Image (cartoon, rainbow, N blue to C red; front, side, top):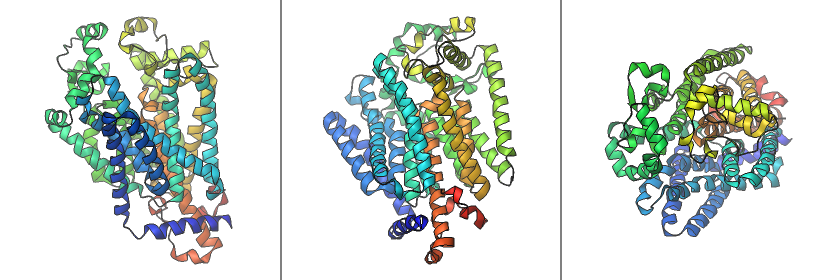
Length: 542
């Protein structure tokens, strides 16, 4: 009768929420989220202790009393924190001060996660065995990462902490969104609509009126502080001169050849890459890639098409590949009855990786050189070097790296520019647990997709697998919040909603006839043509 008990709790939650329209709930969540994004940064200018106290208390209160809004409250500060930091940048003198302002989004995320983790630990039976299994597996992975963090902490506390955050954040979001999705009626489609709309408004403003956008947001000040060291760095100036580039503005650093690859250099096309509200091209591109992919899978084609020009304007290869691969995978596999689509995706990705590595070795591509550096480091020390040893963010002066020497040697002397290489370098053979967990979750998504035909479940399979492969050639593919962390958050919400729908269906169809008038609340993740057997199989919830 456990399914009936769970369904009773979730049905009661639904009845309370039906007093408001779904759009009211979503917009309330966004209002709270923007408050929690801007207020800590404004308070920071007055007093950092007050800002810290406000952030912690507000995150606890919101998670406790507006638990269903946690996904929005976590996403929005990460997306728009840099805009608020830029707005207040005239009040600081160095970029290090802005870094402090930007830390409040992670603090909000961490406190929300801790609050939910404590609630789960005190009452795990409130969730189905399916959810508990996913949570326990992810906790096991965090424990393994924690061992390497402790080792790294003794060697370089700052770098170890940075990479603990980078590796842990996707798991944190997955756990939080899974728990919330399993417990509450959440409308992911509506959240995505508001997210893309708000992001598109700012991005199109930047695209068509860049100077006005930077003036209104104090973006000029933000970028000047961000680029201050590069503007006087001898190595950066020398490299720019060798490339025939004369740096006259902070915007020159966001210019590149089309898709930032030597393969298009001969075309002579230089583009000003869109940076979005994050003021970071690659981060923004990954944000758009998952939003567009999910909206296209959900048949919201117009919104997806609105986002595509923005993604193209970032001129970023990896995020564009992610979007195309995920969308094509869904539309080509939606009627499949075998595992051929997922096997075909794996084969295509292996071929893609081989071609990119082969071409990159011939052109001296930085990402491939960094990947090979990570592989060489793994071979030399298979047990791993510790968290924080290796990786872009572990290098004090990244511009001082001698890439010409690396090109001559055929590999970098350390893991850089490749998240895959960095993981192997830092965690050694223990990185196998990381890959095993992510591929396992992708497999769960694929099996559920085959049984339910719920479109979003295809994203769980393809989104994770493509993200892992993209990490071969970009450190940002795993280690910026907008990439793997957001993908895992969406996957957690989708799997949580699937569990919730299944528990409700089980209670209605088998255990408690009184639920006949309670349709599964997570309709966006429920099959279009329902096969009752797919909901009554115990393996989905046990």
